[in-house]
Image 1: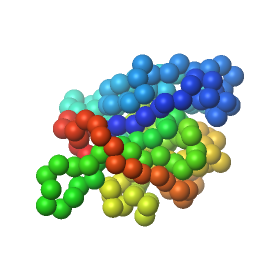
Image 2: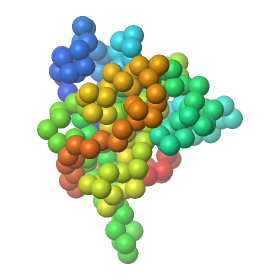
Image 3: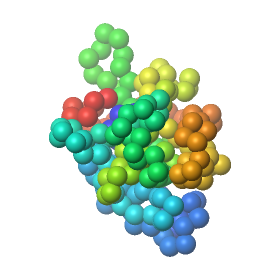
Length: 191
């Protein structure tokens, strides 16, 4: 996943979608970038947290965690008991075209889902998004994607006692993608 996602839904809509008793706080803007505050939902409710874990040795924030290494990398393994849902309505990837220097901004969303959730890990007031290999529908855009959870898998992901592998099922629903004008690809956090 590149470094942008969107949450453009009303607080009440998000509350209804995730069964929250109180409408959650929403980020200041719909397009969320690394180090911005974003909504996360855990077993104890919803709140805002900053996107990107602070690495122990300093450096750039860790905005993504590969699903394949969650149980082996100490940075992520210790957070497996702090799983969260990250509500979104879309995310962006930048498609590379051979022979053309400029990349094309592509908006990707779960077809007909409205609000969906990425799998995430929380460390205090900061989070990272879990990624996986891209599904066939978007491999022409990018080789990886945020791990979109199916609605029925969200409770399993939040259950810290559940087997991580059982919870990390790649999204098998339809995805919509379209070209979109927007800012150039991020330089700081890769693409």
